[in-house]
Length: 316
Image (cartoon, rainbow, N blue to C red; front, side, top):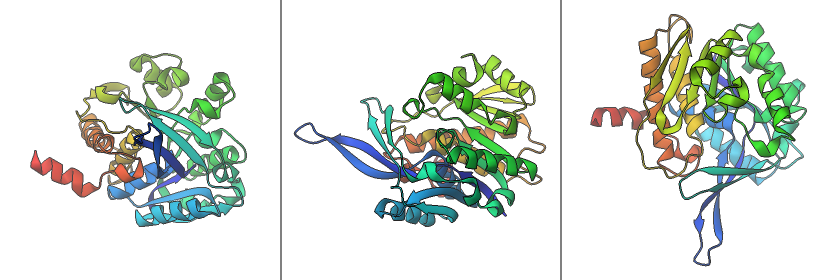
């Protein structure tokens, strides 16, 4: 039994690391992709995780497979394709904020019949994002997995991470990003995505609307402002952790991976008997993990281990 199985994209983040003396941008080929990031983040924090997706039969695909394995992620659900491994060109501003340009490839070629039903049905949590909803057949594969998980009593978590460059219009994005909501138990939104999904930028009202649609736990990340939550009709805000930002890439995935890793450690089920004080402790832990990622460059390479966070707690 897995703790967390994620499905979606694993890709190469061509991340800007600086400029040369001639002012030419310099890039590093970092492993990335939101669902893969979540799987690695949770694995580094002690969870048993698996990843379902697709890479090209090329050097980048082999590299990404190796990275997942090295981080303890089960790759039995990872397929290969004749299309090249997907890349995301990530440029970083002076303040650490990112902009994306995608070169799509194998990730969007995953079909429903390539989804490993064993991994979907024998896990505590199935997690996915919205990038795999942007193109067929990966869209069908992702929704198939979510429906299968729901039918087998698996907790479904969703991060509708909006990437403007992957959609033909904002309206199309909103339609497809909202499509999985009836299947979702745990939803994480950034404050930027909140109005897209809920129709309001007010966390109280937006989370209430999501709860009304059947989402059990709503999490809204607010950068340095911390993490807002709605759980069983009540809301709260857990303060963020101050850090010197090197790169925000992967911070949200680290946060969510940390949350899911802690939820799956609970006896009796991820959400069963969860009280607000325990949830706030989990979110505080996730904030610390995300802050650690922000303090370093890259996505997966920057993610903390459980020992790092625990040593930090002892040092405090």
